[in-house]
Length: 384
Ligand code: AMP
Image (tube, rainbow, N blue to C red; front, side, top):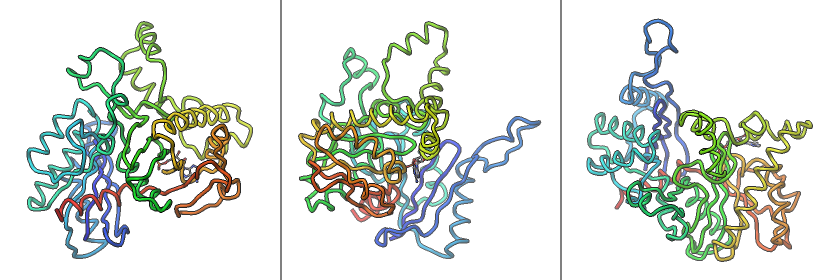
């Protein structure tokens, strides 16, 4: 079954054509600068596609040029926010599209763009089955004591302010793969999954289900990320507001100027590791802050999981940076968890064990593949 996987942003459209059974990519691409002018010179001449519909025409042309005639069975959309309603992938119709749109206030940058992608497909291929796969859905199993913030109840009842969690598609995919590696049915897998990419989050899994996760009301909370601060004392924001910072200034500082970039001047883990190895003290401190924060979460989520049976690293940093994993591992020695230095440094695209034989529990590296997870979920919904 061939599925077109779409990740639609406000000014970009990322796509992959996937063969679900073979779990491979037939073609992929990225259309950028949708609806953008020429950067302010003169008359704002359009240099990218005018809108998502035009971007989709480009996708269609590129796919056909690459693959010739082919029959797509369905389109799977990555949708960022499913709110409290969506706990699994759904077949999209008008009512579902409007429900996704009603969640716009919770994800103002993402959900409107996802809806533009859905509507563009509906217009071009009215009979094409479309499935929404939500980033939040896997975390709908969080118990209330984990998703509640200790603020007045009306913030939840009137504004929906609670922990939602993100990266759910990846956490679920990696949970299934990790359970299989340990020869456990997924319902018996308890563990901690660290998805460490440009955005990063860690999830506690109990019985194969998400029971706590570090991203919260938005993808800002939790770990130190490429440009996002993760956790901090909320009073800092009050302090800055009183000092005259605008909400836009504060938002930009937290989401775009912080994290590794704020501490080390660079948001890319590879560069920060290289700088640290070359003696850059700020880069070393950034790594120390980020690895310590993650280790504290892993300790806490060991408890949340009811006693983890494994710790799992995934995504760009988790899969590739043995240096960062080693720094986290040093802290985990307090729990009797030991990495094997040699295994940790093995470069591989395959899932593998990196812990020492006498480690209290195994530590795994499991590559994530969100597009494959979306393609599989889409195929499952379409097949009913
Ligand atoms: P992602 O968002 O999953 O693509 O992850 C992006 C992050 O992974 C960036 O911080 C990259 O620097 C980091 N990354 C990718 N490859 C490597 C590598 N070989 N070593 C260290 N970090 C890497």
